[in-house]
Image (cartoon, rainbow, N blue to C red; front, side, top):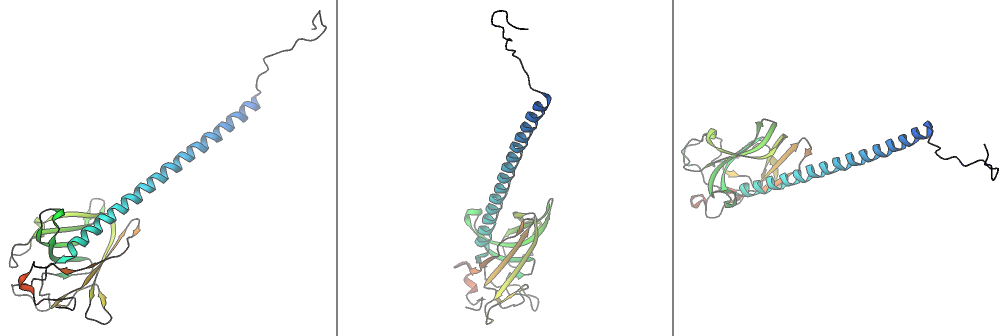
Length: 226
């Protein structure tokens, strides 16, 4: 049909998209949405990994500081009760997976003073945990009852705890997993911890006699020195 005045066919409007074009547009939108979801998921996973790393580093720092505090000031007071032949003359027992000793509780963690401590890997609801138990020291003749001790969990979800002790009198110094020397104490202890995320850096703590805390232990041999 032509226009009677100009003899031209009028312009037609309203041409729509074909089905193929719509499918192409939908496919492109789907790809864009998929890319956005993937980017958001990656961002969320990255944030989660960063949070876990920060939490792990914080847990490591707190546990290391606490262990340095209670292992760095130990008592060299000799036992006044008869001891079994071959056992330590001190309130100290060093095994490969457990350590018991008498030390000084840092005041910032509660009431200061002398305590019996035990460091071990204990069963926990979510696996195993590094736990330190402590009882106020009263008298060497009082048998220890660890069932009534206070417990503080240092690290959760651990799979392995290894302890070694340095004999400073040997040349060169020797590390041993069992402290069997009765008349002196180790100079340093090495703590190895492994968690589900891998091993922690080894923690080596110098075990020093708390000055003035044991007036009767002036003759104690500690790490090969008087």
